[in-house]
Image (cartoon, rainbow, N blue to C red; front, side, top):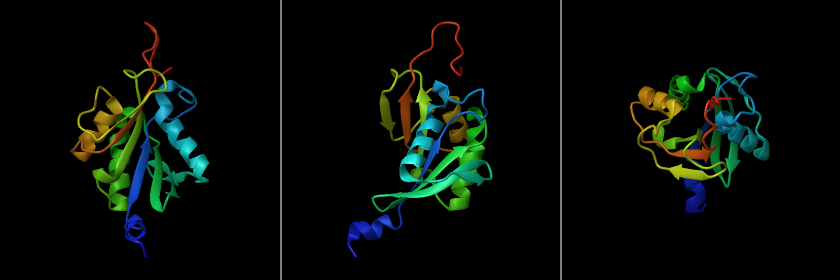
Length: 154
């Protein structure tokens, strides 16, 4: 067996898409993290199912296991769901990729960062507080700033 393939058998990336539950938030820019994970699940043929605090599903990309998750909590309380996912899968923050919206990036721009502080994002702040570390990668998806007086969650 090739070394790369042997290693990929142990690699699991837990991809978490942040957003808010319910019809009110469906399709809003603020939920772009959830939408990205839904799209990835569809592309990989992964069916997301209820799994405690989140909807989850398993897939593979080039031999590496992906565990897709969309917390069923409100975005600003995502930390408990993410902590539970990592605990039950016996994984650490380094195995996590959090996908979320970023108002400071222009619409459609992407930024992959290794981790650190919350960057002004309350959902990421919740995860950092519950995990006790900010050292997990994030994929930020630009949604731009809303016009004055418009709720960014709308």
